[in-house]
Image 1 (cartoon, rainbow, N blue to C red):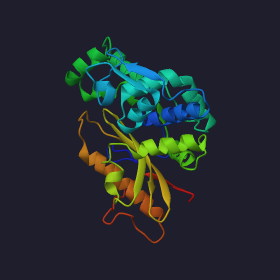
Image 2 (cartoon, helix red, strand yellow; image 1 turned 90 degrees about the vertical axis):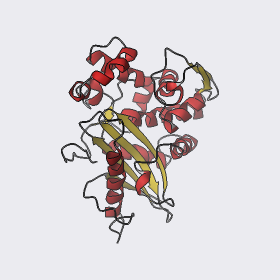
Image 3 (tube, rainbow, N blue to C red; image 1 turned 180 degrees about the vertical axis):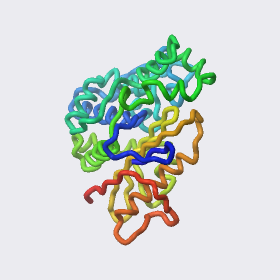
Image 4 (tube, rainbow, N blue to C red; image 1 turned 60 degrees about the vertical axis):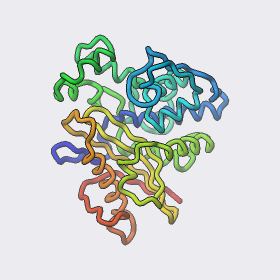
Length: 291
């Protein structure tokens, strides 16, 4: 795991803020409940004005949106739609997602709430009444005010470790995180993620990727599995932190892919890096999956 803060690194077992990476265990628990017959994936939910947080997908729509639970899961993983994730948390149950991570042995993974709860904690910490007032006041806030909120503190928000996230990916990749059909469906959704300028941006097209990003002010993350044409697969978790509120940080996005490529290259026999010219000395946490 590589942290972009004053050039330092932290260990594979140090807590990090998950941000939207939490949507992976959320959708996995949904898929498990569907496979067990506990939820009907075609059941309808509505994203209304009181649900919208702003952003992509239903979270940013002007009008109410009716969709199935299955489509909410699709939007949550592919678009990182926060409102869709909120609606899914309501149906799946946050306690069930917490039970899932414990069942999978992810003892350092903590889930404090759905996306709306993370946003509300930031509003509370800066003295705003609600998410709307928080969004209104955000442009005038300093980096210190935002980065000092609970949402950016792995000790007080939804968090895990790079090692546990690669363990989660490994279990999903080997059909050990639930029924095989549930694991396959989660992988298929992660393959359709629209954000491909972090991990995938450092790898040639023949390397297949299934992944999930996570973004908050000052936080850029991605976990994913890189599948090579020879059948080898590598689970990687990269978490970064910068003292900036900039919405666009292309140098950080590129660094995520570069450190992943370098880390995978370090365990590929006889190959300095699977991507020519990738020579970053910064680390990620790669795990080779069984073929």
